[in-house]
Each structure stands twice: as structure tokens, then as C-alpha cells.
Image (cartoon, rainbow, N blue to C red; front, side):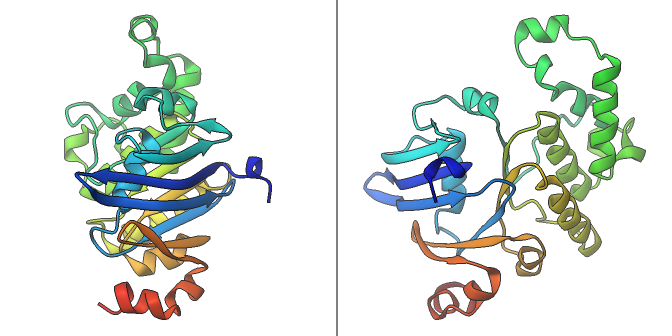
Length: 247
């Protein structure tokens, strides 16, 4: 498959912290409209991989190409502008703003200082906010301040804030942590819809959830890819069972 066909091409990616290789010669190829789930034991390097792709951490060596654009020297905000959105483990939302306002400030035109001053909530923006709120199950919560949302709803709001930016690649770190069973099921359904026109990379521990959403699973161990493939093939892989699933 030609390289240009991949949305994200990560090759020989390595990052060392004081001689410790948190990510070690990693290769990862993400297709368009693919949901890729990255699993592995604690300390496997999963969050570090998202840090590297989003520019939070600089690679020691290797390349990260997003639609052919080399990311390793780009700043975090330039990577966001290029079309990559990231959600961290703890929801980073504006607790004192309403759901509506959280979504509104995430609209791309409001992001530069000049844009923020000149920014008017036009009918186009309003329509987008309502459409996204509906998508993330928060239509009834638009005028509720974010601090009053349940933990699961805060997670959805943050996914909604990313969707407002319409990224082509979404990076989600443990999106269902702390959610109830029904919230997890709804999140799986949401990610299925979200991936119809973008690629999603998810870090997750909940195997039931992984089964529901993953097109492909990558298992990391000590910063390296241990296995890669369908959920079934990964679950049946003796090496994976030994280092991860067996626990």
C-alpha cells in the first residue's frame, strides 16, 4: 500500500527520557475512517505515543507523517490546525461555562486573539453547536454549567469540543474511564458514527469496549509493538496473553 494512502504514518519512532526508551522504534499506519485501539499494560508507552503525535513531547528520532505532512518539528497548535484533535485522560473543559459555551469556544474561528474579538455566534455556529450537542447526547444539557454534568457527560462534552474543530484524526485517551455501562455503550455508538468521516486512535483498557469499537488493535509492550491486527487475532496471540491479557 502506498504511503500516501495512510492518514497517519509513524515510522521508527523513538523517545528516550534519561536513557529510558519510553517508545522504541515504533511503526504505526492508520487508515482513513479507521478506529484503531492501542492497548497494553501500564508503562507500555501508550499515552507517550499520543503525546508524540500531538506535539506535546518531541521525538528523539523517527518520523510522524499526517497526510504526508511531517509533524515531529511542529508546535502543538500547528498540529491542531493541521487537523489533529486530542482528548486527554481527564476531561479539560471549562467548568464554569455552559455546555453551549464550551462548544462555542471550540469553534475554530474563535481560536486566534483577533478571531475571538471579532467572533460572533452566527446562525451557522449555533446550528453546528446544536448538531454536535445532539451527536454527543447533550442536547438537553446545553444551558447547564459544565461542572454540573456527570463524569460521563463531561467526557462526551470534551469529545464534542473536538468535533467542533472537525479534525481528520482524533486521539482519545481512555474515553470511557469512569463511565457507567450504559454510557460506555452510547460512547461506542458515538465513536462508530464519528469514524464515518475521520480516523480515530483510542487508548483503552476496557476490553468489552475495545471489542465494540476497534477496526484494528495495536498492542504495545515496553514501547514496542507486540502485536497488531483484529481483536480476535490479538486476543488469541500467546505473547499478548502472556504480557497483558493474562493479568
